[in-house]
Image 1 (cartoon, one colour):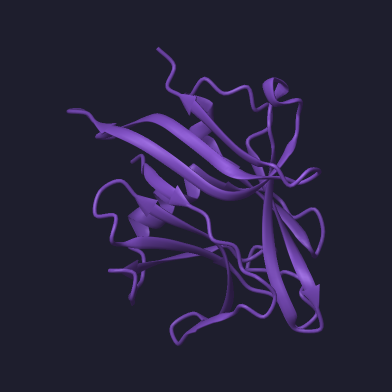
Image 2 (tube, rainbow, N blue to C red; image 1 turned 180 degrees about the vertical axis):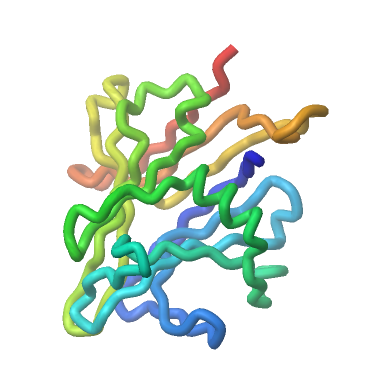
Length: 192
């Protein structure tokens, strides 16, 4: 099953921590808005220890979790089938250190994108319990391989009559050039 979303990234700043009893303390990496029922958002989060290092799950990978915020206010756990679909679309890469891991944006493979490595590098920021996250992606040759600190990702889709019932038509990355601070917005459209 393919899940297509409108993505709106929200990054945790130092000291930003969310506690939901069913999950416990965690740090938001990004928020996804889907194209249907946009009032419901999907939160993607991680967990860190008091030294701002990513905690591991039972497979020794960094914790990468998801949950719904219905009407942007009420917690709702993710259905297992939806969780598997999302985990495929946002593929967890192996941790490169206690302070960094990657998430592969697999939907970019279906588009006319010159991004050679569609990996978002998630980095822990802060120290001594004053933790946060940031997420960066390297753009392609058409953008001189600049590194984009993501502030938004928007995905357009259209309905289809056959499974997976949604087709990605465009993804727009929005953020800031890490080197210059310049605002960048790039749209990658579907292959024809």
